[in-house]
Length: 90
Image 1 (cartoon, rainbow, N blue to C red):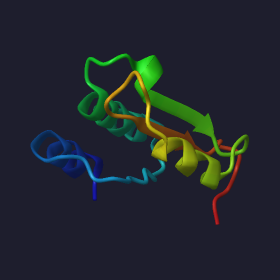
Image 2 (image 1 turned 135 degrees about the vertical axis):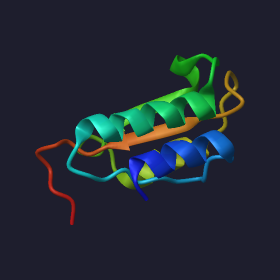
Image 3 (image 1 turned 90 degrees about the vertical axis):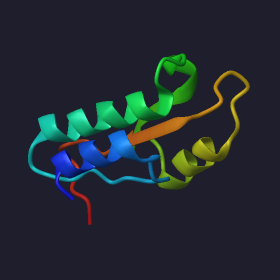
């Protein structure tokens, strides 16, 4: 899926449970990430609803556990784990 297709889809449909943003252009990945954040969280308190972390500091299972936990302050939550640009993914 191209970034343009993703942006079009996210405007028209409910977001899927999981997305993986890959590609050589950080700007396009970031624009998709911002659109997803706005769609899922909207005007809610981003500090309570958004969990961003580096996968070099936390394991994927820790991120999933955190995403599954309920928040007392935000009805919807968004986890955005990222891989450092120096780390290569398998």
